[in-house]
Length: 100
Image 1 (cartoon, rainbow, N blue to C red):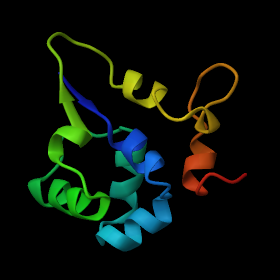
Image 2: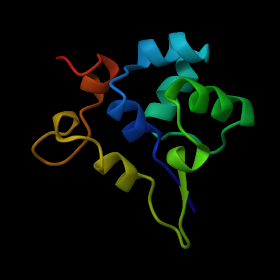
Image 3: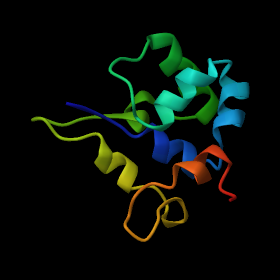
Image 4: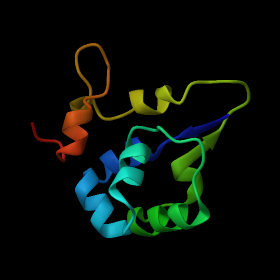
C-alpha cells in the first residue's frame, strides 16, 4: 500500500490549501483531495509540481508499506497544532493556514 505523506509535508512547510493551489497551479479540488489524503491515484505531473513547489523528492511525499495499512497514520504525524485533543486532524486549521 502507498501511504500519502503530502498533508504532513505541506503542513511542515507552513503552506495552506490556497497557497499550495496558487504555487502549483493545480485545481483547488485536487489540492483539497491531496491534503485530506482522499485520492486513489496521482499523476506524474501533479507529483512533479508538488516536488518542485515543496522542494522535496517523491519519497518525501509517498511511502510504500506492505499490507493494507490505512492512509491515516500519515495524517496523525501532523504537527500537534493541527490536531485536536483526540489526535484527529484539524482540517479547518490546515485549510486556513494554521489559524482559526
